[in-house]
Image (cartoon, rainbow, N blue to C red):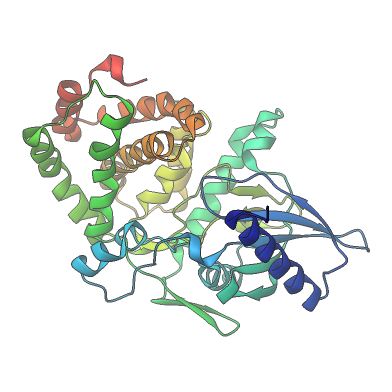
Length: 371
């Protein structure tokens, strides 16, 4: 019996990857797979003859639904699917290349691009190393200075007026806005997928109507405040410690291809409402204080209100995405992160301005279901 369809496609992709590496002078490198994430991307470390290492990115183009065209209407985005609705990059390597180049031009530490074939979804990148913030903290390094540097880098990003198009070395990518449609998807994934993970929950028409009424003004405010470059996945698993560099460049940046223009509170929520590790209330407070120290002209009360409201939106989005990963995609490990997210949500809901949202949660998602 001959090879199956999947096996044949795999061997074809492997031949394509080997040919790409050979064409760019990396054919003799030893290749070692790296652990994956929730995406369809795959990474390998390349060990070169001179002892240096690089990272090989493999993002098969056909594995994702289409991206969002810049001028697409809501109906057109709905027809294209989830990536277009949420304004995700659909795994496009050209998004990574253009964003990396732009970040590096601002003095930030995104990986340099050594070789790329964007249409085929392949690239060779600078290896920033293995010192992820999350791994260093697990090994006993003091978390406070790392988070302080993460805030320094974020402030640097927020100081730069974001362009409408990111460009690098002939590759360009539109920097879209985290608009109300995308934010609606962020809140809607919770009511769609949480009951599929927890069948004891039932969100009837009245519950969904009330849910939408609560989020509508928050989404409108978030879209109106979309003024800064937003990494969109800014947390300890995507930040690398580079102590030999200076200032904001000491924070290596990964996984930024889904970047948008967004409200400045969004990436702060990603950092401090980290699904994969505990961020204590005291560390959260210290990071926010550092942000305010570096941005003395900011309206602190207004920012905190936005941080709690958009943070709550971000948290329910992640809860919904994790419920989908568990139930639809057969990835049960994501269920273990959800109790932590419920804890972060409680912190946000302590803000009196979110009393209506807290009441909805207390009514429709009882405490025993928040596990």
